[in-house]
Amino acid sequence: MNRIQFFDRSSQIAIPLFTLSGILAISLKHPALGLVLNLTAQPFWIYSTWKSYKKAGQIGMFINTIVMTLITVFGVLNYWVFS
Image 1 (cartoon, rainbow, N blue to C red):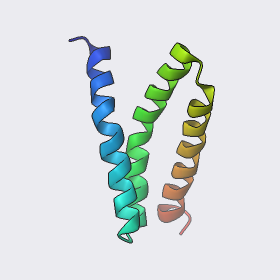
Image 2: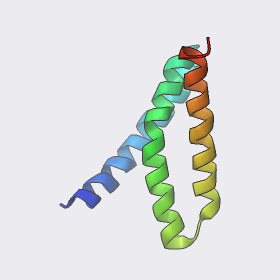
Image 3: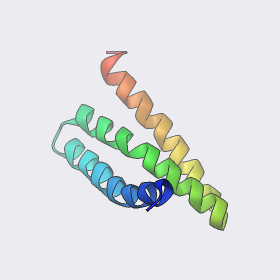
Image 4: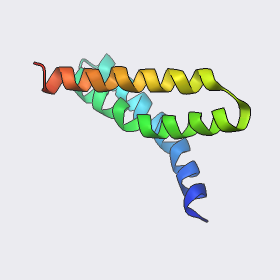
C-alpha cells in the first residue's frame, strides 16, 4: 500500500473519529477540548474535500471546509490566546 492509499484510508477513520469526538466534547460542556478535536480533523477534511473538488468539481464542500477550519482556528485562539 503506498502513502496516498494509506492517507486515504486513515482519513476515512480520522474524519468521523475526531469530528464526532469534538462534537461530543462540546455537548458535554468541554468546548476547548471539542475545538481541539475538531481542529485535528480539519486537515483530513481539507484533503478529502480537495480530492472531491478535483475529481467531481464539488467546490462547495471544499469552500465550506476552509471556512470551518478558519472558524475553528479562531475558536482555539479565543480560548488560549485572547482569554
